[in-house]
Image (cartoon, rainbow over the protein chains, first blue to last red):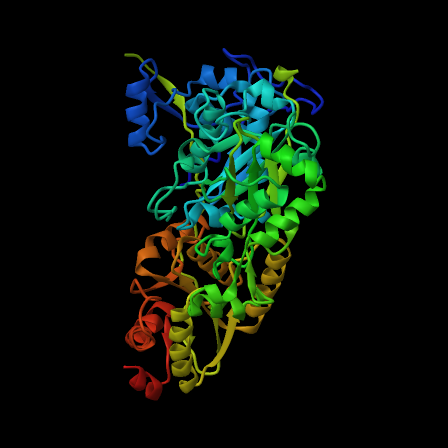
Length: 381
Length: 189
């Protein structure tokens, strides 16, 4: 005989307008946290990390034990229900609830105030047009880059000046790591199994999370140009970083030519027949951005020049490569373009004031960048 | 050292249909749909050979070419084409899982065919078999029929690929749960 079906106790939900729905950091009359509990070493980080690694929960770096008190403290004061499903994450299609975000963020060492940013980032990543499924399973060394706009950059210490892509001592590293742990633990991304990335990328440990230096940019913030003013996050499927050094150019068009021509190399995803379209993200340092803006104030013109320069003469490709692109209708007037249209070249301003360098981020291809508003977190008010 | 309780950070989908789905059965008179892609020329060569064998056995063959751009307007168009493809066939053979993302889309499209009730077989190369099986499980259908071709494949000359296709035809039929008419089966052997 089958066991009698257990009916869970009735749990009235508070009205949606209630702001603080948490139970504090110690206990709660209602058990909001529904994840299974495990018995583990909680006072010794290294012992817990070994335990977690044995179960496939970790990434190799030390992990903070996600005790109930820590997870409750992470959620305390936020205005989100722990059981709210934000998205599902491929390839495992696990349901990413606020609770799972909190647990993984605690393990990563991310600050509680980052919850809204994490949620917005995950909403962006889960948009079908971002194609996280392909990104998480591919052989390519791709990782979702997260670019933050708005005042939240300052509140969370999101790096946007010198060394913004790595090296600054900031909790942003832990925020990026929280997203990466979620990809493992909820998305089911396992190296060599569900992720076939041939080489991987360092960005798959703590992500690539940085901000735009809006105060030094001659153009409106990227997210605002994409329709979201204020606190926002944009995700972009980045194939690592490519540096472009230019110690010679003086004129705006010369800088853009150097960057565009450097971006358009034969083996990049955007010029592969395997990828019918691709975006390009160009990070200009504030010095070069200002020089370029002085001569070419219209950003659309800047994008068009970069787009034109990021193309190759078709007869420079190997015959087999060219034939495949021709069959796809991608050879136009004897040239192959990395991006289909100039609008697919995204431009941001960030980095140090030493100038000299630009950074090119090639996209995976079919992942279309997504921007989401970051809801205000009561704790950051 | 103190033991305490920690919360589980994982969220893995638990539901799963372990069934391989219906067998293709006798193929004569049925329309076998081959899903192609824009990347792997070797898969085109394999399908050419398998299609000829099936036509000789009295089946009809329909080809549909997917591509890697599954987002935005292109993605919407491809989704419509896939629906039309599913409507027009009786049996689906979906490939080729020969890279990470293309294995992903191979399995996704195969799951769409299987969900429509079609006898469905996905085709992967050996290097991507485990990924294919994992994705089928994560898609809720661990028993999905998957036929495995050797790896590397796309790097071989056409004659070599055709030899592989010829050698794998009986195995494909077995994976599909398909039957040929006796005369055609003798040719396949």
